[in-house]
Length: 330
Image 1 (cartoon, helix red, strand yellow):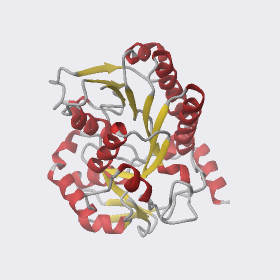
Image 2 (tube, rainbow, N blue to C red):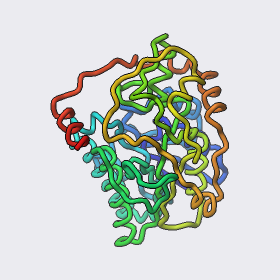
Image 3 (cartoon, rainbow, N blue to C red):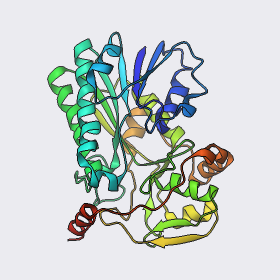
Image 4 (cartoon, rainbow, N blue to C red):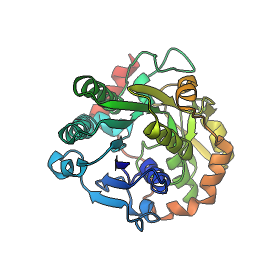
């Protein structure tokens, strides 16, 4: 099998390539990344593999990526830009990458007859769910442009699958953490922010009262879900990928150990995230294996990895963002 992995130098992508490139089933891996969030350090262990081809390119430029889809059997589409507040301030950037970029992937597949795509979707599409644990049939209600951009990317894949006979599996990821997670950005993933603060001997910045719970899922479990999806015969399916075992931010801080400070709650964020994962367990024979305690221990063991990462610092919120927050409070 010959595959393309977009965003392959990123957090999840680099772990995924490390796993797949050792598989006898995989004959060639083309890594496409613009190396803005992706990091060459993430792929330092795999550059030696002859069946890996690294392409520095942006999915928003179809002319720079389309030729690499010739002879490909499947695409794993991870490339995206994330974070909530920046998406409010620059929604066009998120639509351009997360939606238009996805269209470029789909059109490149169509041009060369590639029939299978695995999509890294986001559980943020559920917004603030009414039911916990939340299953795949929950009402879609994205609260931010980032969540919207990821969801319309998923819709585009479904539409192309229907019209052009593509096969897809969309994995709605919950709170993924692990080694190589991004530590920069004021509104990045909580685990990456906390790790950078720990390295810098800074107090942990807890949003709200810290009692909110998150469904943390370790990156190796997520990689296993992508692997199962890639080699599965299932077609046109959507699956939640989470641990179904939410933990509070206060619990996380107690595991990490250290001082903490509380900052104002951001409106539009759910009090709870909790994935119902019966469907993926049943249909892909997948289940999470790494507990939060074990996952954090693995992170701390490899904490030196972040020593050269940019330090997190608070950023000012623009007037436009304040207007958006005010709207969400209504």
